[in-house]
Length: 317
Length: 310
Image (cartoon, rainbow over all chains, first blue to last red; front, side, top):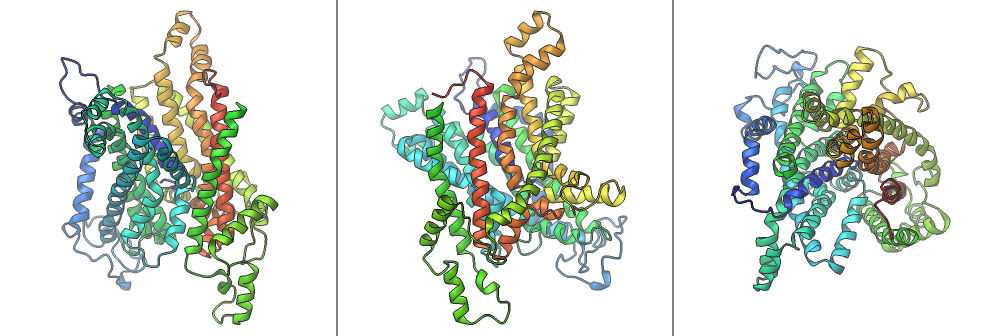
């Protein structure tokens, strides 16, 4: 996160969640308006330039992630010391291997920027999915059952929340020599799920008092059915908002961990920025281009979260 | 009020135990051995190693170690010994703490002054161009990772313009501390701005503001007294919890600018597998965090008379 150790993502998401919490309530249906919350939100989104810009950027990033070969023919890991970094970038040669120059090992910075997207996107999406599933389940169970179950789960959430995020993931990752994508996702999720759990718990507590939930209970619906068919749809809005914003934050966290030398082994923007930092006075392009890609990627997801929040928050209408 | 504080303090106990236990287990699950690390490549004689392990209590089961550690900490205020240097952790902390406090204090000042100012400007012009520009600016600030921002500022202000020194050699020199403080403050600054803006924009529509304007009060008084007092409550809450976050959050910033504070010490103890130092420092950070949260909740009642804790 920007500075990941801080509760910054938490603050962002909480801010968002508070705003979106209104969206979680069952909407009173007005006779002239038959569109659902989601229909309304979609109408809003289609007209929002923030959404259009961020969606376009994210589509481009996903294309780069899945088809890096479409963008560059160069190999990101083969270095040629003859093309050492003292050979300056040839900014005129669009999309060729020497476009953005070479790094210390003579590897093409452009190829590394393109292939580095995979690590960021994989960690970002993987962590968000894991965190949403785990946090969502914990929050749902705590909020629905209340009482002693809630007390225990809430204290457990507090425990994980109390450990500074970056410090926790750093200690976790030190235990692994071979840090694959899965290990990094595991570390980030291990300390990241508390956010969603808290938001989910709050949303479930407000939703479970709704009349239609009592009606479902009276009709003899089973507990899982009430939880997932009746309560879940009305708690999704704030969770989706928090999840979208934190996706960007996790990408930033992955890069920060890589920068500290505790991230992924392999091609990653964070690793390249860290390497480039040592050459900052002679070859600024080594860290400049991965930094630009990283900032644009994080910005795209945070803007998407912002747009989704504006669309789902009835107060904004 | 007294009962509320007592209940909150009691609730803190399981969280405190859980957090320290979690960090303790994680630290001692790490591969590597700090005692072996003392001897370098040749290694010491097994007897000496065993004796040292015994001296530091590392030969006991982990839960026993945890029990002894907590007992010493609570009864004697003893946070253990840094194995590499043989110094008590409290000593190490005493060196690092003032440095981090200075950095965090400066950052706090920056985020408070600029965050609130930008938030007020945006909130009073909600929906207009200025507001949108400020919101976009805050999104950008949130998106730039700390280490990238640090490098960018270094290149611009230290190498190209020569306005500020690139690294910190003397933490009492505020000229040197300015850049790291700005870097540490940016993300929080963005949140303070957004929080202030939302709060101001919402309260502008409140009845009491309309009444104040209808009474014919000058605009300065309406905004400065009526609006501020009510709008800044959530901001103060956020700022309160952020103090703890700023202190623990300086790992990257301190490394980037060569500041020997808590963040730097924590990073070194992670890399050197120094369990005791790490557990001690994190424990203190957790305590700061828990107490800051409690204080903020109490402050909330002072600021907003409608809130009463029975």
